[in-house]
Amino acid sequence: MGVPTIGDARDGRAKQGGSDVTGSTEQWSNWGRSARAFPTRIERPQSTEELRLAVVRAAERGERVRPVGAGFSTNAIAAAPEVLVDTRGLRGLRAIDRDAGTATFGAGTTVAEASALLEAEGLALVNPSSDPAVTLAGAMATGSHGTSLHAPSVSSQLLEATLVTADGGAVRVSDRRNAELWPALRLSLGALGVFAEVVVPVVPTFRVRSDESRERLRPVLDSFVERARASHHFAVRWRPHTGEAFVRRLNREVGDVGDEPEPGRGVRGIAAVRDGLVIGLAKAVPALVPAINAVGNLLHPTGEMLAGPVSGLAARPTLPVVTMEYSFPLDDLVGVVRELDERLRGVLAPSIVRLSVAPADDNWLSTAYGREVGRIMISVPSGVDPRSTFTPAEELFLANGGLPHWGMVHTVRAAEFAHVVSRFSDFHHARERLDPDLRFTNGYLQRVLGH
Image 1 (cartoon, one colour):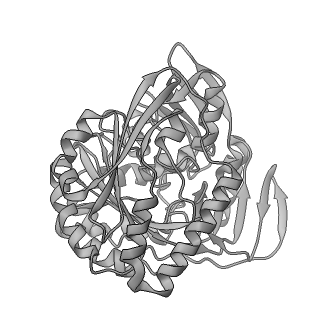
Image 2 (cartoon, one colour):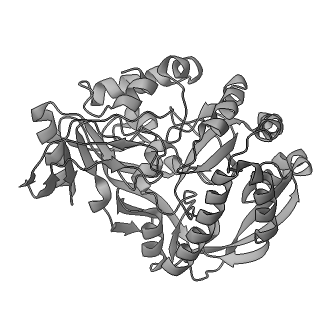
Image 3 (cartoon, helix red, strand yellow):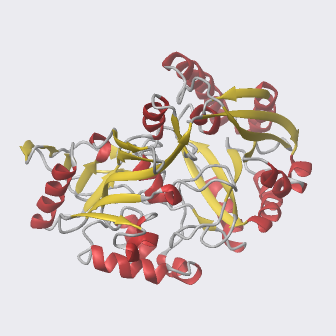
């Protein structure tokens, strides 16, 4: 389940070609502490040229490279066996084209940072990812999405990109430039190269009116698809063992309101202490999990709220979590959820389940390729063994033809993907062209792509 690749460690520090280069025995880990690696070298480029030189150095030494953004993928997709390229120095707003309705960002810019920069210009992202702390490039590369059937996923919002390829070249790709690579690049798992810049659509700033209510889970499922279509954004969360769900309907309005992409440090700290105590109690006395979940439902805030585009549509967990998400044809979702509810009643471990939706797209590796989908995401706190929750859930998901999120925990292998992802071989052709020596691979990609 997302077994990380551990590389050999080297000592020393150096400065080469203007990029901060670190050889270190320090362990890298993702935010959820579910994947780790010992990269032999860490590169921290601050420009496209520095990124290009970092890849050239790796090629000259025969080293494999993995780009890392904010580290929010919960599997080992970003674990670097040798050279880790930290893209967070490639950040900031580079240009706005108001006539075209586009903005150009450094690929390491987070959703929260991009939104704050656009807010100052009276603009907003079309549909931010569900976590404001992820980088734009990372969200695109792994297929992150929002909660709408009416707005494109993060990958589908990519209009143009500067990609540093395995030979150190910087290539501009869009639906007009190198267009044959475009459906592969928008959701590429970091297997085709490293994003340096991305161009995305922007719209005049808007506000989001949300209404969250506590309801019985079964009636919510009966009307799930209809309600998802009737709202600009729609999501459902529930805690197992309770039979209750929290339904969140969000609609966009003309006008603006002060946005707060992430809560302040004090608010986050209080919430983290509270949630940490609850998780600790659940781990110590598993039999209390149903009662803890029931109390959590009673304390869960409900009602109407008016917020900015990011604080209204995105939220970061208070504590690190490990996640699993599978997608299904929209009309098949409810049946899977009903059986999942039954299975999780026998699991005495803390978890939260979220249901969301996404429109069809044409990205070759997308779980929504050519079809509207419903998605089931299960979050388990870091430090809690997720297997008791994930194993029965994944057995159910696979039996019902589900496809896993590329950036979350799953056990699917390349042979299985090749059978169910219709453009899998087309993606491989693009990879053979851009990275014939497999410079950008690691253990995870070997498992899911076959080499």
